[in-house]
Length: 162
Image (tube, rainbow, N blue to C red; front, side, top):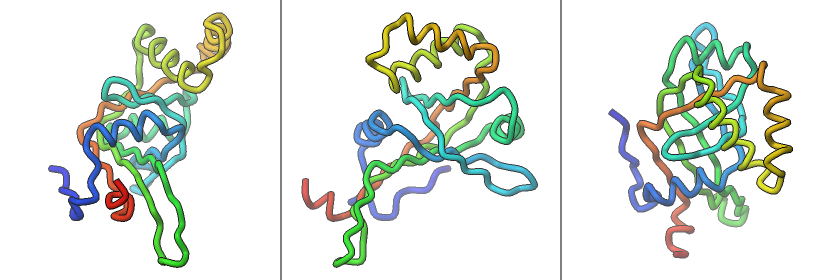
């Protein structure tokens, strides 16, 4: 169903790809947009237990696209170092394919936003995080992407350097 990586020597293991998702702070979520056009949007996220979580407004292009078609992909670039003298880049990136849904259950929504706040404000007190969540709760929408396929690749130079 999903294509195999052509350059297998450069393929990241599942553990390495998951580590990229853990480390990353933003990526590009690709959805099926209006009038058949792809819709790719940069977004913050958290990766937890094989799933990706995103927040969004209660209405808009992203939410319309999710409701229209649950299939999505998400790309995170871990490294992109340009090496001009070699006309190349030393890159490492991951792409996840899966199905995305709006979290309607209050408990799931709360757990997801707490994961997100812990990732981006780990030193904030629980009371402060809770106050911020409560302040935005009514307009907050949380999305969950269940990953069906995860693939990662890095430049051959990075593979050789290991």
